[in-house]
Image (cartoon, rainbow, N blue to C red):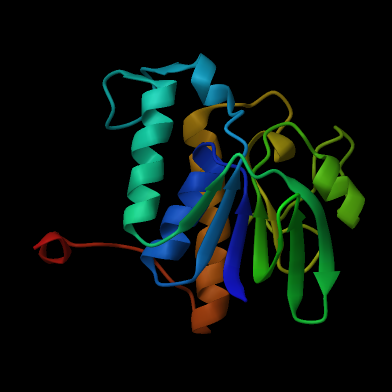
Length: 185
């Protein structure tokens, strides 16, 4: 059983996966490679002067892989269900179990609806500040929780917030993924 499954490989999903994998939680990412980032060019992402959206996704995937996440490209999730000890994710190829799931499927809210997440008046998935849905252990991020506020940097922050909540729960105290220069040596 994995610790975390992330469904979606845009900025929100890859950010969540980066935080969890970097902090040694077994993380699996399912990415159909249909992110809007392939239509984007980033000039408004802090620390990046200019980068093509596809290049950004490729570099972020490499970063996530380097921290130990298992990326499943072109393996769409067909079903998500709650189990006694977490979640079961089904694809056309296999079944996977995890304690937590982070949904990062852009504006496609169908998985959240099928598993019974509550929605707000705007038709977006209702989450708390940590991006957790009404289903315990299930997080929703990015465009699925925001009406018309679809920016890569916002989505990445949502993914980071979800991951930090998972890490805090796992560690039993508030966790801050804060590195210092000595960590790079």
